[in-house]
Length: 205
Image (tube, rainbow, N blue to C red; front, side, top):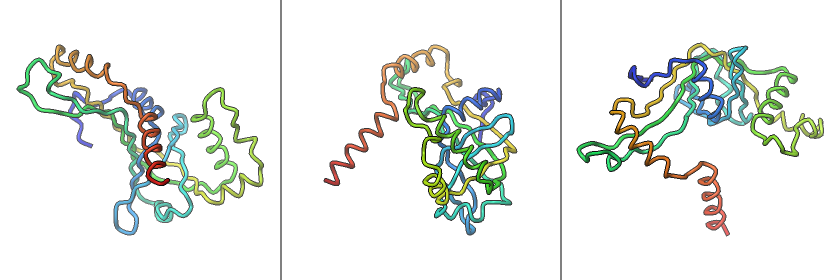
């Protein structure tokens, strides 16, 4: 990834924060001679230096993903930056964003206990603290049947790089102008998904 020095995230703890807060990643590998990507949540185990996830078993990416270097891209917050927010209009638009790239090698998870443990961890991460749903409450036979439809995997992390393009190449005054404008915008991913779901229902009824 192209990273000018002023945009590089140097602290590993800050990179880990980006991964954990934006864990729905794009996982790239080569499949049948072409780049292939799956969009999938990946959980970080800092102590073991692994990312954990699972494919739908019908997804062909997992079938030849071993013995190659893969790339997981974690997209942090990003947004358009308008020159109209600056102190002068003699400027051009840009985009601010945060992203982390993780390179590593995939190991397929064949052990049922290790797969189940990774699924428990994933549910625990995404369910609300007061949620009534617990994966351990699901019937064991039902869960075993569902597990047959997925292929668990873990990525041994070999290299991590992070980039935070946050107008650091502009003056402090201009950065403050941009921050003031951004604070007035309320546009969350959850709201966007809800809007798209409503539009989809409307188009199909």
